Image (cartoon, rainbow, N blue to C red; front, side):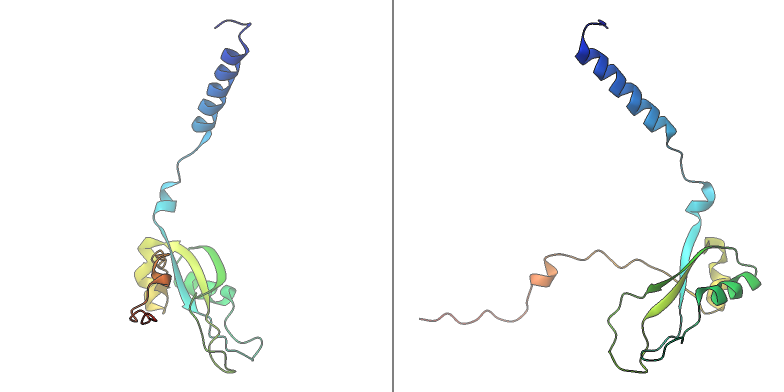
Length: 136
């Protein structure tokens, strides 16, 4: 490479940076591939503050059963709920556990968290009603 060629030098530096960046990426740990998320409704109801079971309590339930919990969080179930006092809020507690512990978690009332299918952006614009009659 000619030292007086700035394009060649820049290209060489860019390729070196790309090679270093690619080499620095580490594959996920084998355990990560085996982990799943499970959830259980927290039992909270609308208009009643401080109802529901906190994630820490459910985490202890899993750990007491011998299930290792890697992460715990509170989330929405993503569903629409009627807005009436005393109705469920739709809050759930989500836990990351080993996939091999799914049966034990289900025995405690937890369910596997499954991502919803991707939404079809055209489905919202599709109607089954007949078109309006044309005006003559």
